[in-house]
Length: 124
Image: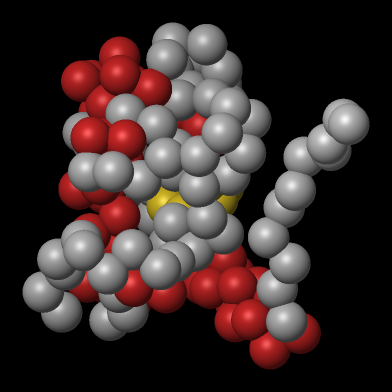
């Protein structure tokens, strides 16, 4: 029996919270450059895997674990999702976990907890 890729289904209330979160994060400056032109990056692999947050290949870790990135650092020439690889990107620009923790502090919300990863400590 062949299975299709399953994605998490959110309730309408959860979807509304996620949409509001993404809107707020898209308004934040890029965590690498400080540019106000940011896109929303779904964090995956690298430092997240190091702390036990993993998924199957090609699946998002969580709609809650997102950071603002300028286009070039998201999918452009220096992009985490455009071929330089997560580990190389994190060595150059900082870990996604550290960037996520800073976003949590700026928002006053523990994104790891919202994503169901309570084991990650964030001091708000």
